[in-house]
Length: 569
Image (cartoon, rainbow, N blue to C red; front, side):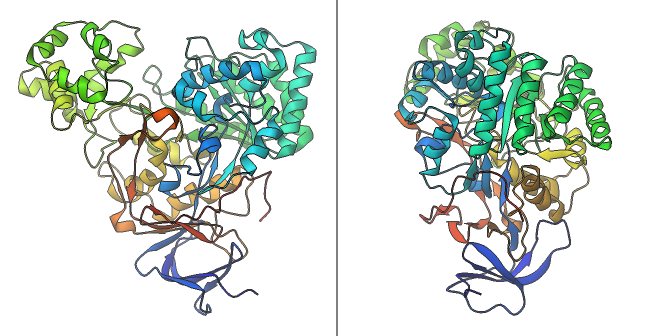
């Protein structure tokens, strides 16, 4: 046995199994855990973890780092929040396979669906690939602060095979279907961990067109499912509106059967049908009882939009006077907004824009985010309630909140999972036996949300801080963030602290774990902006035995690599 390169002493081991924590030392050599116990030899490097939790690294199964992995060696903010493995290529969007004359089409789609600015993608993407295996080769040539894994995205696949017909959502011919199945098989054999598709009206390109995969016919999806069955690997990730819930879950059951592969679907509570998610969860449970493997991907807090003057959206963006200054740099816009006569003019105007865009004036569901941020605010803290107490209009309250101080205040607008004004339904979702905690969307929606910190939130809110209901044991939460997600995507070499397992590890100062307020930085290609969020309390994050972060600061180590295919324990 190699002598340890790293030994973590005196820590409280929360091993990812869900079992009780225990105190022990842990040794690492050659990127793997070699021993856990009380008689561990001295290591080349030693960390005293007394009073700290020693946990597996987290596995983030729902990200959109498809572009970021091509220009950055950092998978932030996921990697700042304990994620040591990230899976991208979700929701059917991505950049491979791709023909040269389709670059702009895929950029337009990613900009619209995942809110990544066109200028960022045009400057940042190197396009040094054509096929999906080419794309994986380009990623494999790089090093990262976390391991990365990909999925074959249906929209790129469809456009590659069908050209404009695919973009226009025309039915696939038998030849088209056969070719998509072949390319899916090719991608899985090259190392993809799954195939993803979208069936939601919410996913549109930047020019307003529906995603090419919307309402793709069952024959097309079945052909792809047969390709997956031949590959014998990967899962099928799907997002749907579930307007025809019985029809959709019936389709997904058939796809799980035809593919002989797991299917994972997005599960959210909508205001329009507050109980619909529970009916869907029951149908998922029934499918699993019958031997099919279908999981619901859930978020541990609401899907939310963050609003602010420096962000992509704010409550006044639809008013004529604001539209005239929207192009100005932030400091100039703020100075203009602080003029009393300009304030009076905007407050007297009405919102102009789509009904969907007008949700930024939903005063009864809008809250100051605060610092530290509060993702489960009570009704009396809403903008509407505050305005009523102060005898002012909600618009006045919001305007003054956003222009005070440095003008960087943030408002929180929960869109899903908050119909009851609390997170009781989320508690049910994250504890359901056939659910997985995901949907952090790291790398996407860069100007309106930052939910990759939902990993940290699962620990802080659901095991320690929530005052509006019972808490979960911390060992349960660690299992959900590590072992459960790793097993779901076939990475059985990680997610547990066991001798022989991959040495992906977090050291947590649990008592001082805190989410900071999100902030805007301008570190994307072309000076593009994005929302980031740091979390205090991560003493160290370790990937393949190398410390990549200490107390939130990068060490310079980049041991993360592309994962090709599933892994045995």
